[in-house]
Length: 163
Image (cartoon, rainbow, N blue to C red; front, side):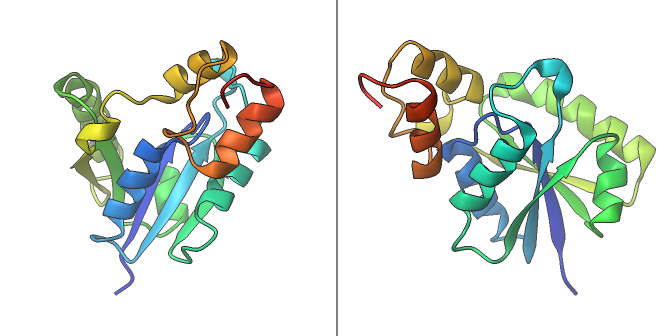
């Protein structure tokens, strides 16, 4: 049986924390589909296509990870991708309440789709895409927190002092 999990998010941009969650998900699933949400309402820094390209570049050497854009209900996307589970990372206890509510609602919408949580490694518990964007925009060094493709994309956007 081909066990597939959807790892959804905006990934604006993808961080090493996201990469860690996906890699750990590969220990549990045969394939991970990274669902890059359109999220127009959030006003992402990178376009949907840029975010897809950055995720694909990050996992170019891992054939069991793919990136697909989606909009709409996550459980519908999971069904379209023939996934059995939704993979989510938890950084701190404060993430749990929100994630628990989402998992409960998704189960209510389609009880066939399970949600699996993995804890972030300690070195990534403080990392968020929002912090990466903010620090990079002010010329801060985020190179140790993002994949090389993201580092290069941020350097083009914010020519740098420390990128």
